[in-house]
Length: 165
Image 1 (cartoon, rainbow, N blue to C red):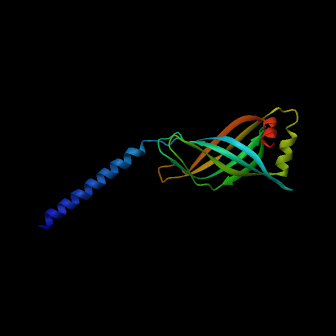
Image 2 (image 1 turned 180 degrees about the vertical axis):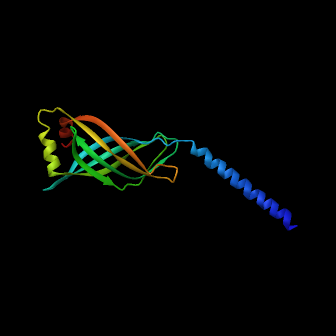
Image 3 (image 1 turned 90 degrees about the horizontal axis):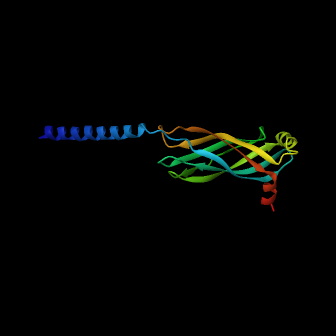
């Protein structure tokens, strides 16, 4: 009587393991697209004797059919091809599948970097910027833990002056 019950139990365990193995393999063929990251906003938060503090917002686009979980972001901001500011943010945010959201980051610029950047500004109507860095993702062993990003564009100083009024 115990022998048929053990056979049935073994059959259930092996069947369950087989189904779970096949289900796990079905997701392995999919590759996770890295999120696209762009600069959404920048503003000066505080000016100190030796550094300036900026608050930026990065727009994160998730083009995957599953949600991605952001654990943190580190980035650098360049203006006219010169290092201007850098920062890191431990932010936990879930971006839904085929969705987008903004992530705030505090950047710090030393007086030396500010002076270098300002000396490069006279006569420039538009500033070139580049934001680059890494997005740290959660989600397990099948998800890459660090994804690099880079975004470039231009903005005018006139637009910045209008937004501070």
